[in-house]
Length: 188
Length: 317
Image (cartoon, rainbow over all chains, first blue to last red; front, side, top):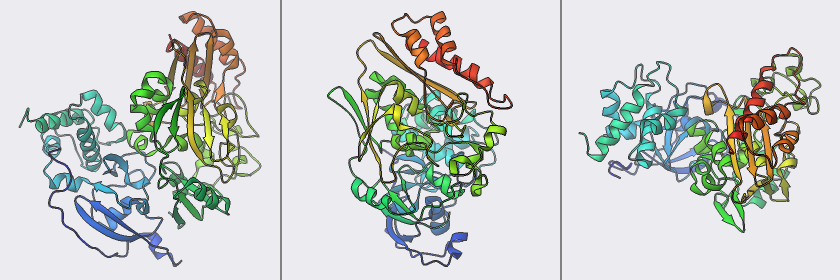
């Protein structure tokens, strides 16, 4: 694949910051688990609390703010989607402690490797306020990784778990099909 | 989320041993349990969570000796996309495909889908607000309250919540068996109103495999679901059927505390040709015993169930 994750992979080591999260004020002695994971091509090592979600880890520890929290962690909106081991998953319903050895991609990583989906989204105005866009972009990228020739129906099916309050639904299939053609070299 | 201890199990036996002790719960896909924990809907918050995803060899789809075997950790999306399942076990592939959203299908497992907790809004209200019969209380709040999505076949042990699984009716229609670390259970017996869960599994019992007998050639199965927003919603009524060669199995779900087998309807359609009028009268037979709850707010589901049965049968033509 031309746009597999990786980019300029750099091995990084990062200690834990105190997460800006209510659970960290809990004074019980936590049993932090060591995990190692790859995020957007960079390698990270953390000690995580069992009750941290992947979304918390990405936002509060690494500073990647593209996974959003819209529905309040119910798994109903798709705005926190990241690609984990090739699958589009909801980072709000994934425990960080279960991500040991995982390869994760967020919208920041997709932008970093200049994936054509980004330009297609801009070209087709497939966003309005932009809040849900990272979730759509990651889900669409996971689809394109698996299916280089998606029809508009395929795209509608794959993006069925992403909500958009602005209602730009009509534009998403056009943008994703367009990106697929750019990837194949049919369009530039 | 409140704190808990998290253990990665290496084997089913190890997970079962941990589950035996005190206040524990297991996590597979996590799409049901983590929501329940975050909103603290249950009286007991698990102190230990046992992760099954680290157990090897529980994620497979294979056919052996005329039986389709699916590992309990197999993701719903993999079942929905499997050519093997799509070709001979259509109802199950369709049911998996019509469960939740694509993201939840990528995470959720078949084992978890059949063991999930009910979606009754009194049961699910955050902070365990309603101490209902399903949580060991004395009252069912839906019985006299807002029950437009609740049971049309009466209560089980005083609870009128429904089973929300999409794959469950497909497994019943396909006459599947559910294998655990202790025994093999017929789908007929698998579900029950057991506080607060919906299956008869013991505390240290874990689903390890789903076994579906291969339908004979010429036997067709189908699945149909009614929900306001297609698959992303939980079903308001769904139905799976397997008909052909003098065999007929029809199962409704989201209409009763457990998947509801329509025995009368099966007897009516067995051995007959499938056409509009036969399917219609079979649908009518399926809801003979249906009754509304106080307030008649769920009366509409009875007509819906009748139509779902009819269409599931026509899907087997």
